[in-house]
Image (cartoon, rainbow, N blue to C red; front, side, top):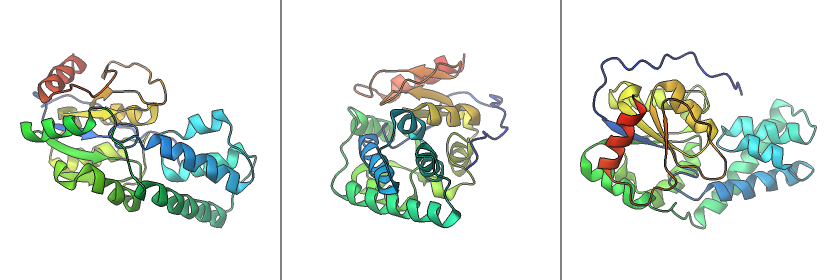
Length: 237
């Protein structure tokens, strides 16, 4: 549950043109952050009381274990390891039911994925969501859009640690600096930034701070592969 970001240098040596796009899932490609909002609030009630807005904001985009721990902490509770595990299992089961009921796309996301796939750029799905729920979501997203998928329970630490993005670049055989990450949250943007990626931020539920490697767009609608090359170049300047 460490919140520390690994010490990774964002070297741009050996980079040139954009080689791959690394996509966040919840709140970026899918409107699933609203479902997580329901699930996190229900978990808090399950554990003993309503969730404050401050606690909810602190969980957006975070890894499952940390989000569950913050839910306990927001209620003034200190969970035992067994209580933590039980709460994580409860939330996974609850979210699985919500995911199977249907996952709406974010505006323009389906078309953007198709455009990037057709351009020949590499694509990896990089999410803090665990494999169990990610596999449900891939039924909507389409597995053929991605060369690889990296889930939060398959890396040593989830976002905001850069480990998920470092793993995605490794699977493609690329330097992270050759990749453009697409994110919607401060947590995800911090992870991609720390890994050395250029970050396209399309905010969803929260405001994302600016940084030198972050470029911003209000929506994925109308986004083409050519646009991504331009955004990537502007983030490397």
